[in-house]
Amino acid sequence: MSLALLALILWLTTGLPYPQFTNGQTWLWLCLSGVVGYVFGDYCLFNSYIHMGSRFGQLFMTLSAPTAAITGRLLLGEQMLPLAFLGMFVTLCGIGITILGKPDDNRQAGIKLRLPLKGILFGIGAGVGQGCGLVLSKVGMEHYNANIAALGIDPSFINPQAMFALPLSTIMPFSSTMIRGLIGIIGFSIALLIFSKGGGQQLVHAVCDRKSMLCALCSSFFGPCVGVSLSLMATLYTSTGIAQTIMSLTPILIIAPAAFFFHQRVTFREILGALISVAGVCLFFM
Image (tube, rainbow, N blue to C red; front, side, top):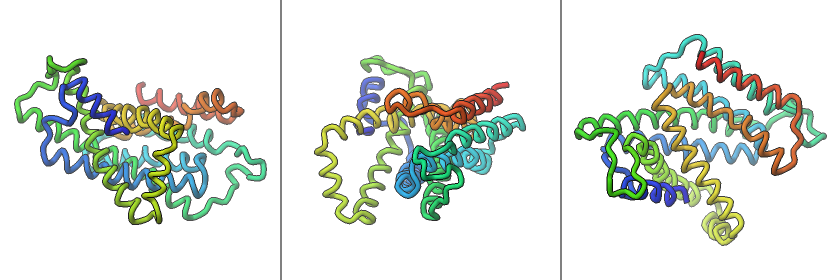
């Protein structure tokens, strides 16, 4: 679904439903990003939900920010000021406070809950996979930019024949996301055949569920289509560590929708965690 949506966006904005002006290095790094971030990272994330629930699964996703900062330092030589490190620490503390609130199940004892080892390993894999995948994406987009410059094409190039023409520099993250998505669907198809008994039949059954597919279509638009593309765009304007830390605010941002749609009670700890996280993000821009 996300590939179809991305193809539509590219067709409307560039006149062609596929990435333009790419080269082998661009495809190599973005495909590596798809394997590490989409296939490995999301596979671990969904399994962590199964073994220890989404609350703790999202807790381990906060590992993606320091992972992105460390990987960005190793692959891109990105520098971070001490204040940025402090902002990252404060933001992650706020997220941790929010996620580690008292569970809805009164039989559990909050952060004293003993987590299964398999869930912890999947959670670590999810956070590390997302952080590394984002950095690999930035490397791929740097090769993308270099190839555009080598071809003598202005990044502000606009195809006048496109229906809603946008500059090439604005559309590049969406093209990069499409490349990652292509390798992602290949990787998950292979995983479905290898690791899931009767996975093909389960997939066919799921596709026939109209309500589920409508939800999947909406989540595909806001998640792997627009959300991931904007995350790649963010790395073009700041370091990957800062970008990933800001994106780690997801557990904070879902508090209000969860309260509105599912009538979940918002605790003082969750509000406190949100305020601390916002304060941490502000430190990045001081």
